[in-house]
Amino acid sequence: MPIDLRPHPLLRAKISALGTFTPPRLLTNADLETMVETSDQWITERTGIRQRHIVDKGVATSDLAVEAARLCLAERGVQPSEVEAIIIATVTPDMLFPSTVCLVQHKLGAQGAWGFDLSAACCGFVYALQVGAKLVESGAHKKVLVIGADVMSSIIDYTDRATCIIFGDGAGAVLLEPAAEGEIGMIDFLHEIDGAGAASLYMPGGGSLHPPTAETVAQKMHYVHQDGQAVYKFAVRKMSEATEKLLERNGVHGKDLDCFIPHQANKRIILSTAERLGLPPERVIINIDRFGNTTAGTIPLAMQTAREENRLRKNDLVLLASVGAGYTVGSCLLRWEI
Ligand code: UT7
Picture 1 (cartoon, rainbow, N blue to C red):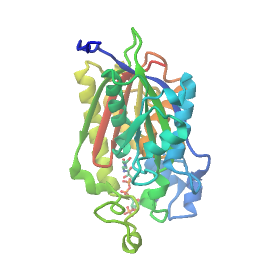
Picture 2 (picture 1 turned 60 degrees about the vertical axis):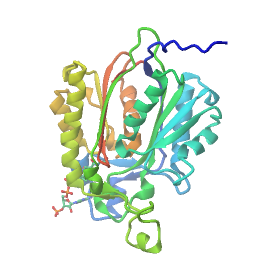
Picture 3 (picture 1 turned 120 degrees about the vertical axis):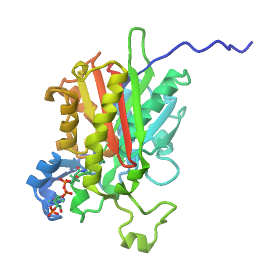
């Protein structure tokens, strides 16, 4: 049979299903008051966080990812064997290799899928969303799972009050499929990285630069280190700059948005971005009070919150935005098609 060299018809990708999972155990501000010198009032006022979900010993990122993926596929009635590719955004892989996606593919029973892990910290989910969307839009695949999953509790020093109050564990998965006729789905992405910020938020130990030794452990190099104020200032500036640029190049104004789903790192960062975009509070999704910062998990978890609160409906124009370690900056404009 002759090879068909005609150009592929233009495809659009859409999110066709969503599933999320957080481990049942809670770590509340009251619990933290017994562990470090802090107070519920300080944590609530400075971050907006009241509790976080934390895994039990032996539960890893792949476990959360699999639960989220199962719920996502069940929502659409898709069998794991039908999934063609899986991308997992995470900075807390089960181990350095094999990739977490291999473990997830096996546990999920998605034998027909290939995939890879993507490392972009808090922007991981939005970056993976673009890569997954392009796999669909290129015609390469029809069913791509994009998962954001992190077990941040595995890399947090619970004697360091500056970081231990912020992070939680959780995962969310979306299924990407070709949009049907008349549907829009994914519209545009705008991402940036700025490696000058690498030393403001990082985990120095455990990689090829500082392989784990008794000394790196004694120096707590296997934990998250953060210059909170530096990251805060960058996040406030960049979240607005990137989203404004993305909206402008698509001819969209803040008032046109139905739903703003930002990364949940600090309630004050979210409110300041929303104000710059001129968004009323009812269009801004905040669930940091219940989940803390779950890194790659925050945006799909916030999508779920938006649906549960009936603030995300089919045809809604949605803006996603995140800033995180790297620095990484990510944003996405889409129409919700579920
Ligand atoms: O998702 C990844 C990206 N990460 C972020 O976006 C995080 C951005 N940064 C932030 O959200 C904030 O900087 C933090 C929540 C991390 C910290 O809030 P802050 O308002 O910037 O506090 P700070 O670091 O300037 O500290 C203010 C004071 C200090 O005391 P002194 O020096 O003024 O006496 C800290 O020692 O608050 C103290 N402090 C605490 N007090 C009670 C720091 N952590 C705590 C704590 N409880 N947990």
